Image (cartoon, rainbow, N blue to C red; front, side, top):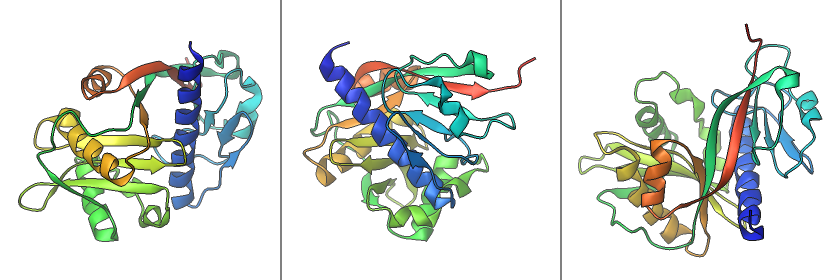
Length: 239
């Protein structure tokens, strides 16, 4: 791996950990950044890890910083170099960090967009993102107070939220997560909206995130490059 790609992965991992920390804070949970990893000692919200590694070669003892008393703890292994099997974990999935240089989208968006600024709009965004799954409460109004977080909403002609994502900014990159679109099109329809918004809001910053499977192929079509692997480990027990 080149030094440039390793720098990008470090930046993406740090940015992702900062977003996970923001979500935890919005739920009243305080995580802690160390030199090798971010971790939260109490079980985080659904879909969010208990720890994120920030550097290659992280000590597997980081699991001592999280709650493994009950099944369900997870670790985002940002450099895909941990072996947590001895601590009762299995690989849940593998993915690729992605990177896109600063710049306008390749395809013009077909939706108007806004940065969500009110609890009511955030609720509409969360319901569209959730698509009936029953987990819209994951995104709480406290997120709107985080200066590093921009919830991006694409609107149809009749004003409904039909696409969106979360942009998490720091001094080096903008991290994109929770990309969605309804009414057909999926991420292929959402990415032009998201990239147009990010380009206008943060024109000098490259864009990072992670994807896998078909969603990775779609991101590559929209100008991203896969720069390196990550794994998410899940704690048992396993039969």
